[in-house]
Image (cartoon, rainbow, N blue to C red; front, side, top):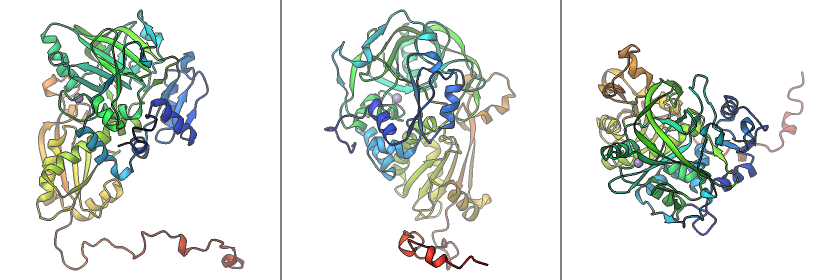
Length: 479
Ligand code: MN
């Protein structure tokens, strides 16, 4: 799928960073920026504009990189496709996983250096990101676990708070890692995990695929690369990790231990509160010679887009199964790339948009507000969507509201009913859903719903302009 193709050299983290540097898309910070706030604040100032490399962060020998996936067109470029083909290309990879290939033990770059007696507080340059965060957090760690019954792997990114020398608290949302942890707990054994930091852009993107349980996201990484992903066996478990990764933390999620985790600034640009969470016991850390550490600044574009693109691809596939008229979808930045879904529909019958709205709610529990628009509206342009709402939507007949559904537990407005009291897990994330049918009628009189257009307005203006305007302007502005 990648345009560079399997025959060309594979896309690695380092080749991607080099490409960004060679095209003025990567800047280098002064050496020694503070791990507390300073690294994240500079990365945030460059967000969606430049990736940043931080040499000697906090005096640490290992450099940090951030923001190398912070634009939609960079992600398309890494995938070797045009922006307009991004979702279909991602979907194709997710539907056609490619089994990984194993690199013999001892020859994987990610295991060149082995640390058996680790102190997580000093071994890696782990930043403190937002103002009220409880401490240093690993934010770009791919957590790999294994179905204890069948051996299938799972990959996701979860936030990890470093608590002490070799213990870290983790937030597992009720998805796949959590399911494997429950299955392991049933057998009375801690869940082995590998936390992988510093992977190539496509493996990073694959980790966020919305696929069913027991689908190894590393196989989607292979499909995105157009070649099987090289993996290697962990030193302390049967887990397979990307052989070319920069850093691998091997450990176990303990059964009966809980430690306080949070507050932590999350993707909706609010803090999750401190709660008792599961604990990873760290056993071994391996890394490349001179590794690079990756941090994702929470709520910035790298964080938002890594979630948005796989979700858009999945939601588009999901909607098109039932509604062939659906042309495109977009999770807007203002909706935190999770909560607001804009759907472009080729409407043929009245009422259809409301079916699409109900289908979208079922596509992912994070989807909170859905706007359905016509084909003449660009779903990637929020002002065009707003224009459709302003001119094609009537609240008394085009609005769909569903009360008391499941939403995102990170949406603070779902907690209001509890007035700050602790919310039992089964009551978390209860949310209303709203859909807006902002489409015009299928048939109408005259030009009443025809978008105003000047013939020629979409064409290149250059042929109609004088290259040298000086002759035409001479004398014109003199009093
Ligand atoms: Mn999964």
